[in-house]
Image (cartoon, rainbow, N blue to C red; front, side):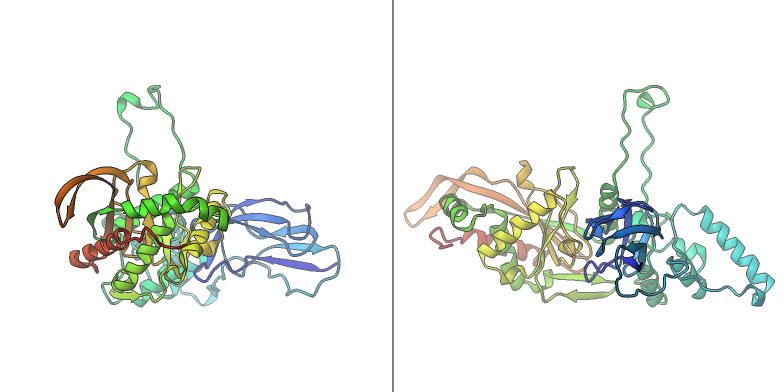
Length: 436
């Protein structure tokens, strides 16, 4: 019988590794073709890895919570029938180790490495063998390594973090952890004595799940990285509401899709990003990266209470029908945990509809490495002064607040304010007689 190497497949252009969260099959189990063998997690998306053949699982190379690189062999499956020969199974599929050639190493170096090993064991942060080897080869001290801001799971320093650090080693653009050696780890405040567990207080301790820990790390990293500032605009969306009210039933009958406010917001933001391309940027060190594609992420709340941001790629190139279908598809798959890793990658700007929860406005945190995020508040009927050629009068209008958080390192108040005002202009100018 032939043996088949089950490898971690490519899961998107910017996805280089994944964490194994659960093995669905154990050694000796029978596997059907296309049956899921294990579950993995990338930055936010959970996925299943299926087998391309039918057979028996004979060997596993990784355990739960271990990080695997794209292309690495996860397991060996003995096929039920002959398949094309696969490459010989390596003795180990862990990250490559650098031969120490102890015979040629002097006593001083041996003692130094022993000290470094003890430091790694004492560290609260995990370092992969590959990162350790690169650090040794590049003469990066343990203390220096501890200060590097990690973007991996639980603040782990990845190979990319280390290579970026080396590239900027002689400059001051490298982001280092301020004061504390573990920036991604936040110590929980000590419980108030009246409610301490030891004294039998009426409390419940809840462990954060994996996604909530990731969200926590991302939020802290964003606040530490970007100089957040906000601009607010009140917008009259009376015509927009009237148009949707008279169109949504026909739209659903014709397209088989619900018409929410989100695709209308996406269209206005995409137009404004075309008008203000310096909002559609990201920052890498001292460099500004201006994106030609307008990829709008939309923050979506999950049934678990966690948050995920699927991305509408090339939003400015979609018509309203296409945008509505894309929004509904991503939202539905997000609720059912069916998003693919690529669905959350490559966003250039993010929106969030805090009005869904009744909030008048919000001050959202920027989704790194982007430089802006726009919150849409709840739409309310409000008394307003209406100007006419015959004079002013009071009328009832549908209004909402737009809250724009932006990175003041690269976006000044004038640009941040003009951008959100432009979004408001597009919403206020909505043609109530517009065809679908």
